[in-house]
Image (cartoon, rainbow, N blue to C red; front, side):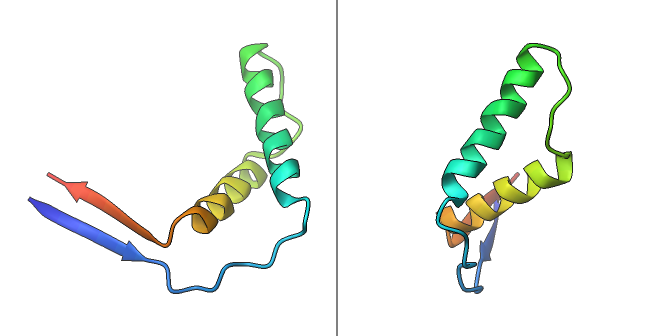
Length: 67
């Protein structure tokens, strides 16, 4: 079994104080649009960016199991 360990050595990005509220609102709207088969207001790149930044804030090390 192989393990790939990725450590983020970057400092946490400085974000606006309302980043978390805005992020969750964008994601809620996107999920709601998917369920209702409507188009989303945010671009896919914007949604990817907020999820990626949230991921970086949540963990410093990611371990991926490779079989």
